[in-house]
Image (cartoon, rainbow, N blue to C red; front, side, top):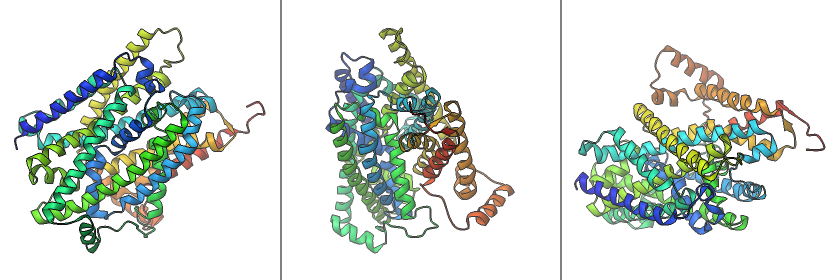
Length: 507
């Protein structure tokens, strides 16, 4: 199968997105871009959010984790379910009661302008780094397996893909993304199911027969009971729950779609439906990971974990399956970037620039500001993706969750303090606390997990060995896992308590 054939399907898929964008963005305005005029269908939002949450990381990296940790990732998925429940019945009622366009407006209501802008700033940093890491993973696969053979450089691939995303999002925003995400989720799930069926047929297995073989190879183990391990079940479940609360419930991109639904009841139905489907889909990705290990053993495939699925699909499966894989991969790419670009534009315009607060600005001026911001973030995406290319990191799922631990931790602390405490804070010091907490946690995690940082950042020298010795002296064999976010949030909460005072009776 020629790279030109695969490339032609990529172009055809993009043209389809443009057609959808054209019809859904007609008669759009700024409210359409930011919150879809609060008229989105909850079923479409629930289905489309699957694609946004899964992204290329789940599509490629989650199957790759099975070889090293069996089905342990499902511990995190259990935590996700708990987190989605908390979002549906604690955060969503709060957002609807305050009639928010940006969820960070809550921090202004509760603490003041500095806290409000601090929350928005941490979201902007978090989503920019997380979205570009996801974007890099998929672009890199397209580059290695298709575009290198066509002589197209990586920088041009990145630039063209970002331009394509701008074309179908700059006008309709959320109003368009609700529909394009639904389309993209459909293709992604089609790719997952087709690949599972093909590999099972090729191996001569049934679904339960495959599970039995994987069980005999000890690849279906879910729960890790080693308390010192970073993947201990409590660390994964608690980490997964708080990662979901932070990366979904405190994330403007994800909540922007939820609060575009007509009312709270439908938004809660959306969240619970979405979470149930997500758990099932994540299990299927782990099942696919087990199948890929069996398939790789049969066909003599030996590649890094993140390259296993694309290598098997593009070099060892029929042309039709390869084409479906490419379409599914592209479908995994766009939802993780288009929604992020739209949400970052919304947050910067509303939270940082005060688009809603400046009543003297006319609709046309607001639109110009929005478009300028949209294009500016696309350029920032380009620069950060190129940065990931220089590092050439192979364990993107770990990088994303590590980034989330540092950048969403202060958000978690701010919202938790606002909801759980009645105390007021010295608003101007909130930024100091939110910068100090992750800095301290970064130092602790660097000591505790120097073995993780060493290959990621190409660290070397005697000082690395000294840190390893210090780590063993302090922590012994205990390793911090995905619960890093919780420690960061708790430290932020404690810092806010230090700068707080008892609320006056009038507050």
